[in-house]
Length: 418
Image (cartoon, rainbow, N blue to C red; front, side, top):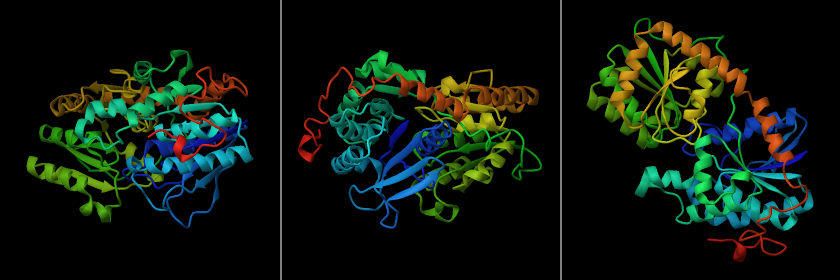
């Protein structure tokens, strides 16, 4: 099977940790590699964000990344990419016309928009994974949501038009149906975790000789709830909090969110027990996970959340918000503990209870490791994704018809919705 992945802002080759580089990059890279191991030929189409990038780069055996010219060849925040999606779609259409894949799989709403515009005129079926939904983001961020004003309308159109939707958690299914998606076209396939890299055995990063270590692994974005974890530290005098993620350590002083978090820790009198590491290489993360007594992952909302999976695979229990995909992966009382979002007092209480019970922590960690190995290995996720592809109408468009996306033989600027 020949698969075209479309991931307009999240390249599988990107360095993780920036504002727009995180779970989707990991997902696209790992899923593509796992599909290739199962015999598929995968091309990932992503926007060129640097002039020196080669047109095509081998990312893994059977996986090629194709850099698509759309707008200036420089980093652009994903919320500012919409004006360049017409050009992105046109170049995709030319690529699909000249070398048609069997299926196009869009990742994120703008990728879905471009994938439909490019593939529909050619009769190529489109699968969509949203990774995050604008309606959920708007609900939680309100006026601070920087998404384009048309996102909700266009996202709903993608949900109705795609031949299949791969939701990453059960909570997303309900949101999709409310947006107008046909439940019969929605399948739940979670994100996965690299079980060779993230495992209970292996090196352990240095840690304090006394006291407990709490670990947050996250981009430095307010909605990730790092501030809530820092606030909880005021009631956890015997612990340190290590935060891994964001820009390199040398650039933390210039990062607005890092400055905000540092000021919060100082105001609460816990600055001496809170350390911002900045960006940590992916290869160094497992040792850091294994050095922690608990991983704290308390975002305001979370479409899926890969960090708890990585912690589970390393045998470390998780205290996490009961939101989105975290409800599916972390079973309350089985491999971790749920807390409500934006409630630092309850975070502190849950952490304190677990720190006082080492046997329970050990049991939760062991259960998490088994759950990760049984359910979330990327080869299993790839097989489930192939099952979704196999259910597509071969060579036919979905019953919904061409709709807004792709009227006429070639997508052009005047035909794309705004």
